[in-house]
Length: 50
Image (cartoon, rainbow, N blue to C red):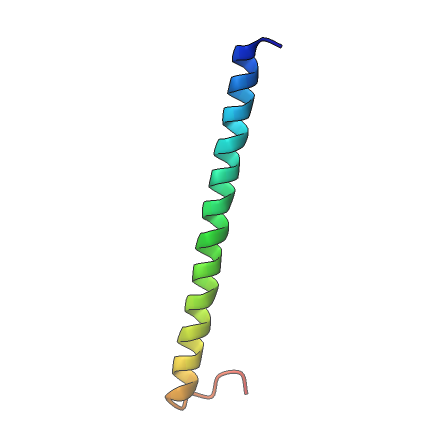
């Protein structure tokens, strides 16, 4: 493999890792938002999860 090919492969792997990290951060934020919303509804008296 030439150095150029190695650079392309390494760049692609880094881009995939960054994309994966962004996806995981987004999912974590969404899960936390859902928990907060559900707790808010429970605090307001809605019978959620009962």
